[in-house]
Amino acid sequence: MALMIRSSAIHAAGCYTTGPIRNGARVLEYTGPRISKEQADAKYEHSPTTYLFGIGDGSKVIDGHGMAMFLNHSCDPNCETDEVRGRVWIKAIRNIAPGEELTYDYNLYDGDEDEAVCNCGAATCRGSMYSPDELKRRARAAKRTTRKNSR
Ligand SMILES: [Zn+2]
Image (cartoon, rainbow, N blue to C red; front, side, top):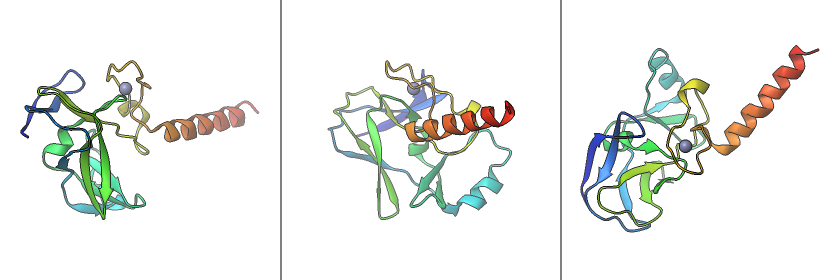
């Protein structure tokens, strides 16, 4: 299978397949140096765009480089990530036709709210790239703050 990077309706650039991909197939690996969460925070403190992928318990991240970092988030994706012994693979979760853009659910759990807004256009779009659990956590935290302020 061949992949190509070109402009995307979701975000600046996206990763597309030129051939069919079967459900369950490993499409590509999320490659890049492994650095600690603290190193990543320091390195990207002033950068609006990062391609970090949390692995293990989240104390380490992959500082993404290569094709996988061009995959955009979608709330109705055609791929998912699969961590196997510290390596992260992008895997198809349905049959994908030639010319389709490859996407996976970022399930973010860190970072600034305004940088996580989702415009994927899916019918099931949750409006954010945060994971459903993280959205719940943030909603609870917001409620706590409101209560504290209204005292
Ligand atoms: Zn969305």
